Length: 294
Image 1 (spheres, helix red, strand yellow):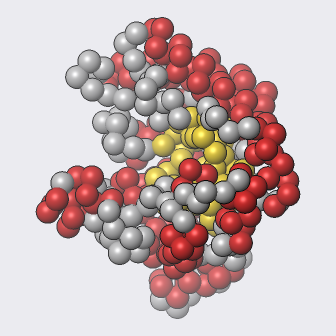
Image 2 (cartoon, rainbow, N blue to C red):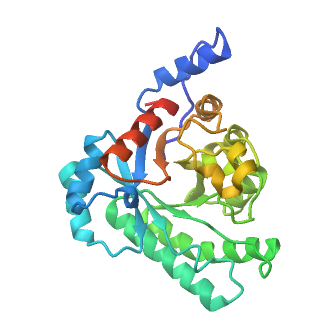
C-alpha cells in the first residue's frame, strides 16, 4: 500500500467542510471500490461475473480462500477484464481460530492462513484479510493475544517472501476492542507486512469510525464498507443494525472521509454487505459513490 504525505503544500483555509471537500477533489480516484466475489448472485460464468462488475464501475474484487473455483478460470477472467483481484479473505479464520486452546486446531488455522497467502500471490493480490483471534468463555483475552501473535509470526516469513500483507479485521469477536489496542497489536510485530483491514460499519455499535481511523493511521491497509443503525439495534437486536442501506445508518460518512483524508489513505474500499443480481450490485455501486470519494 502506497503511503505518502497527503497534499504537501496545500493551502488550508475556508471552513472545515470546504477544506475536506477540496482535499477529496484533489485526490480524485485514490479510493477504489470493490466487492467480495461471493456477493455476485447472478447465474453466470466466472468471466461473466467479472464482466458484470467491470460494467458496473467496480475497480476490483476480493476472493475467498480456500475456494472451489478453478484458479485458471479466475485468472483468465481477471486478465480478460483487467479487473484486479486486490485481496483474499482467509475464510477459515472463524472455524480454525489462531487463538483456539487446541494446538492442533491452531495449526489448521495457520495452514489456512498460509494457503490464503499463496492464493493471494497467485491472484496478484496485495493482502490477506484475517480475523486474528476470538475471545470466548474458554479463551481468555490474554491467551488470545499471545496465541494469535505466536501463530501469525510463523506465517510472516512466507508473507514477506510472497510480498503479501496480512491485514487484521475488526469484527465482533470480543478481541481488540479499542483502536489503541489494535494499533499496539500491529506494532508488536515490528513488520510492514501486517496491518489493519478496517471495517467501518463494525465499529459503529460501540464507537465512532473516524476516531479509529485517526488512531490506526498508516496501519490501515484496506477498508471494508458496511452500514450500521443504532436505532435498529435498540429496537430489534444487535445484528439488526446491519440491515440498513449504505448511507442511511449512523455511520457519519463525511467524518469518515475527512479522517481518511487526514491520514492520507489511498486504496481499496470493499463492500461487505448482502449482494445480489445486476440491479442490486448497481445499487451498491451507486451508494458507494455517494458516501466515498471516487
